[in-house]
Length: 322
Ligand code: 2P0
Image (cartoon, rainbow, N blue to C red):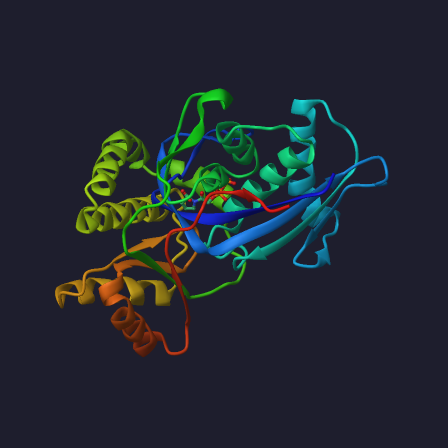
């Protein structure tokens, strides 16, 4: 049976940056994210004896063996869990710039896990879907839900999954995603998070995780934008400081990334409240409220010219489309 699912991507406000188990993708820390409306992946999954091989088509282009490997291996893993072995066809359309720190793997694997489960009629809970999505990509664990989402780290496959904190927040929070560069990144997230663990500050970061998560939950509960923004910016700064202080050090920042960091700091001095977060790429996401959104967009254009800015807000959890 062919089934089609849609998942939106998410951006972590409290970052995940390190695995306890490479295969299971269980994390060393809990993370907390915001699911976005502006970026999503639609994926159809079909299986059956009428198919002669396993194929993966992305944005209308059939992927070669090398490019399909991660996705096809992932489905083989899921098939082994449920005792299936027939051939399948995956067709994905990414409405997210791929591999540029805008978390395409989050929406991709959340949509794929959901389409897989629907196609085999598995009738899984969202907790189960969240665990299956994690086996594809860590951040996909959180894309099962909309709004604010917590991924509790857990210790093994059965207790490492996401939980919704507020699926439909009544809050005019915006995230402006500024595309500094959409090229494939040189250091993959998986590699980056391994290397970051050589930083002498990594343990301290892990020790602060529970406190940061608790503070962020409190900020969300109280709709405290200042607290949410400060905690988000702090978590991003810590993650990127780990990269810089790794042995050897590395960074995802580019010159424009630093210009945008400085801009956000200057805008705050002027009383325009906004905060940044940055993932495994040079792009900067600015958190702001509706009141300042237009002003900030025009400041970014003044600074960087005709750069692409995507205005995102809260997106929904994963859906089976048909
Ligand atoms: C996050 N990132 O919490 C962190 C912050 C990027 C920076 O999760 O190896 O594609 O598939 O688990 O989820 C991006 O890495 O990595 C990521 P895998 P993933 O969103």
